[in-house]
Length: 301
Image (spheres, rainbow, N blue to C red):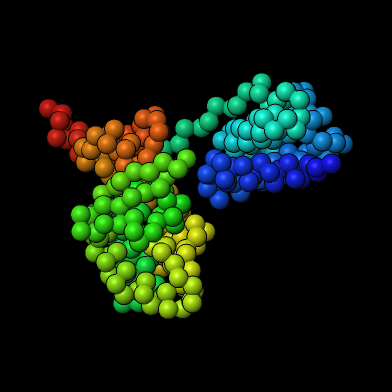
């Protein structure tokens, strides 16, 4: 008989192979399922098939008592709903999904955090571009901000995906979707320096051959976690007091593009958003930009 744990492993493999989910997403799904499994043990419930809608309501109460944010609760319930759909599809349990009727808490609408130009300038001046690691880090910053791609997309990039002569890159996005994005002159120059110099030196540290664009200090393909570590170090060295993730550079790209008058649908295409509503969250403007518009447009400003 297949164990409950094996069902979870099969589901995670399904997310990775068939749904092409990022390692970051899969990690969260696994944590959410493990949290629910721990709850079942506390309630002396054996097996996913024994879960009822009443028990799901009780689980929701437990999550609220632990003071989880609304977005976190919504994610946990959504993860379990997807897991049960998988169990139904594979006929592991009979056609019932106790999470199907659970109402998701309304997500808190947060404005995306972004960097101002002075903050970006400090960040871009940190790396020592005379070293292989410094050249790589500078290229990472330039391409994340210059294109708005996701960090998972950055880590998938191969040398053949770049055409620096025409300043364009092929990006492999979510759900195996591909798109072309333009590369700015600053990103192109950083990439040229890194590819011609730093990357070759990093590749010499291993006998393995790799077509991955970005390499770690061992000469192996850089991971999403590795990029996060690099960014944290750069933030620390730039003396910025804010916490940023690679996604903040994506937010900054979209915010700056729209603030300068870019078309919303063009930004949607560049970001690889399936729905325009995902892009509309960036239509907020900075206080300084708002004041500039007001001063230029209002007769009695």
